[in-house]
Amino acid sequence: MADRHCYVLMRMAESDVIGAYALMMSRSSRRSAAVLLGLFCLFAAQAATARSDRLAREGHALAVKRCGACHATEMTGASPLAAAPPFRSLAYRYPVETLDEALAEGIVVGHPDMPSDPWEPADIKRFIAYLEKIGPKPAKTR
Image (cartoon, rainbow, N blue to C red; front, top):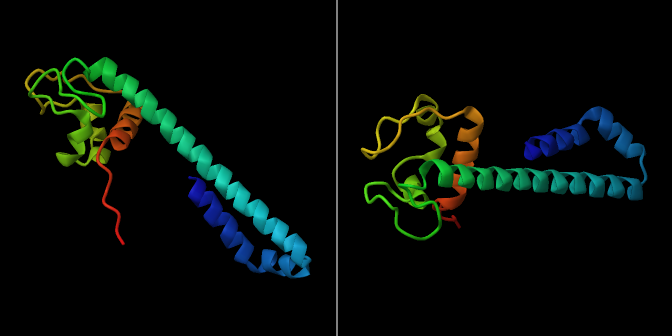
């Protein structure tokens, strides 16, 4: 979301109306405006990161409460139930960002002891944020 706001502000800065106004501004005023725009984008990105971290923490709490009896919910350790994969490795089996529908409807495929009760949309968002944070990171390209 923060990226979208920054993009819109940058496009506005390139528009004719803003561009004409910028030509009338002094060099130091333009520099100040650019610094302010950059600071806004930085703070918006930090706010988005903080929200993502909060969602992941809340998702971890849900995972421990709802799934921890069978699945490993931490960065290390085996799952209490051998048939239940550790959540940190779930992304190797499924694209976690696509689990929302299965969670909303109640997962019926999984290990045999897995409950199939549906999740609330807000909890799904938190849980997926947690899975994305704990799971494997994509390889960096050069």
